[in-house]
Every structure is written in structure tokens, then in C-alpha cells.
Image (cartoon, rainbow, N blue to C red; front, side, top):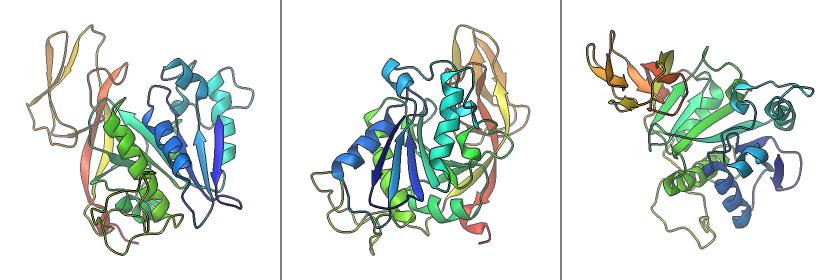
Length: 285
């Protein structure tokens, strides 16, 4: 685990990258931010978590780190011990965790609940969707208080790395670590170091963010070839086909919104079924 800091003092804001070693967008965003070395208005902790998995180019070495929290300092796996030490580093911090996915190129936010942290931060992240995972996030970092995850885009793509950097800067603006521009999304060209030369450009905090709530995982049987026929966050009607395994087609018994659905993203599920729960601005402050 690599731990860096911008600014002086005890950080109460943190960015975590590299929880999965096959998702390089987060570490690249951290490296880019360190190279830009922006003047921060409050200290920021930057963490690249699973160095061993990143070096090997694999999701994890022994156990999925994002299923291992809270971890154990004497755990049997590298990731169990790492989860314990990572949580210790994040104590007292509001956290953004960077991920990428095989399901969609559109960035979106993930939170365990729609709480005051989600309401304050997500509208600044240039995303239009928030996925609420309450009850289906066992062992994941998102259960840590004051934590937002973002899926930056398709795993291994340049777009995901670009999105990751933009999302980090939006998060730092939302938490007061970077200044927020008075004009929203002005289209100003970034400076050579990748930052904006005066104020930080961020999303419109009044823009609509659709909230989706996870219901159940969508299991997939053992097979050699898989297909997914639906778009994430687009409603699947009753009777509509949504996936196939070795040519066997599956259709919806009930309507649902697919979330994190892909042919090969997970070993034993296609992804998740979700409900559309409303718009983020509808939640009371």
C-alpha cells in the first residue's frame, strides 16, 4: 500500500485507488494528481491499495480486497491483512474509492445509502446515476462511513483513466480541498499539468442524478460462453431477454433495471437487478 499526502496537517479527505489490481484507472488518476501537485485548501490523503495485485495485473492475489473488509491484521490472506490496514488509514476521512467495470463506459457513483455525504458529493462528480447498495455490500469498503465509490468507465481504457482524474478533482472540490469555479462547466481548456489554472471546473450541483437501488444479484449458471443483451440502467420489460449462457436465453420474469451487468465481469452472477428509486434532489437534507 502506497500512501501520499497533499497539503499540511491531518487529512480528513482521502482518495483510494487500486483496490483491484486489474483496474488501473485509479492509480493513474492518483499519479496524475501527484504530478499536477495542486495547491489544496485542506490536506488530502491519496492511497494506492493493492500494490501486489497491480504489479501482477490481476484482480487480487488471494482474496477479493473489496469483499475482505473490515479485514484482520492476522488474517490468512494478503487482502485480509491489507483491508485492516487500509481501514486504519481511512479513519476519520471522507473517502472516494475509484473502480472500473466491464459493464458500461458511463461513469456512475455508488453509495451504501443516500445520506448527507452522498447528497453533498455526488452532484459534483459529473455523473447522472447513483447506485444504492444497502444490504448487498457485505465486506466492501463502501460500508466504511462517509465513503463514495465511483465506477470510472470500462476497465483498462483511456477514457476510464481520464474520467477517474476528473472525478477525483470533482470530489476534492466538493469536499473543499480544491476551489469550485463560480461558473459551472465552462469548457475551459486544462493547463499542461492537467489541472485548471484558476478555479476548479466541476459538475452542476443542481443537475439531476437518478438513484437506483440494488434488489438482487442476477445469477449465471456455469457455462463456457455468456452474452448480455441489455444496457445498464435501461429498464428491462417482463418477457424481454437479458442474457444467455451457452445459447440458453434468459428472460425477465419481472421488470428491472440492470446494474453492473456484463458477460464476464463476475464469476457467478451476470450483475444485479435494481429499481429506479427517484432523483437525488428528492431526498431530504
